[in-house]
Image 1 (cartoon, one colour):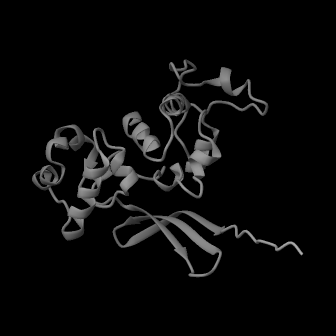
Image 2 (cartoon, rainbow, N blue to C red; image 1 turned 60 degrees about the horizontal axis):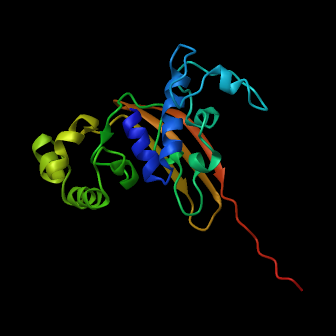
Image 3 (tube, rainbow, N blue to C red; image 1 turned 135 degrees about the horizontal axis):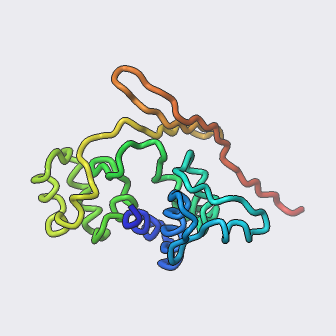
Length: 204
């Protein structure tokens, strides 16, 4: 939802104005019409760019497609040395629009309505001892925030996982998105990465 998206953008340090632009523009990117929302964008915006392209008017096929959406910069998508990027927390392969309260990263927990840092940390601490399996346990973990958050979360694991493997001390790594169906699995995405290593040269 746009509520969760704005919350996630806020959690990774994106300002409120840009949050509104990205949220509205993503809705416009996915809907079938040519009418843009208050802070959104349709073909009239994308055709005015130095390198014009069409507004898709359809669902995303990959997370990288977000880079085409108005407002999403490379820094917002990939992050930088100090802050994580949007790509670390979103997927196009999930069948659910709810957040798994048992596995969500701190930034994802902070995207929930009304969630503050202390409560997010309390949830993380709570689930170290046991998984949250039902509404009663969720209410125990969230306290007064339960009513506003319960509609956005789930207790059960999905069937889509992002796996990151990097050898210690090596720049090379692999990122894979895997979908599990019973005893079978499907690799939905495979990416080999090379971490950029800066070399410092001493002046002679």
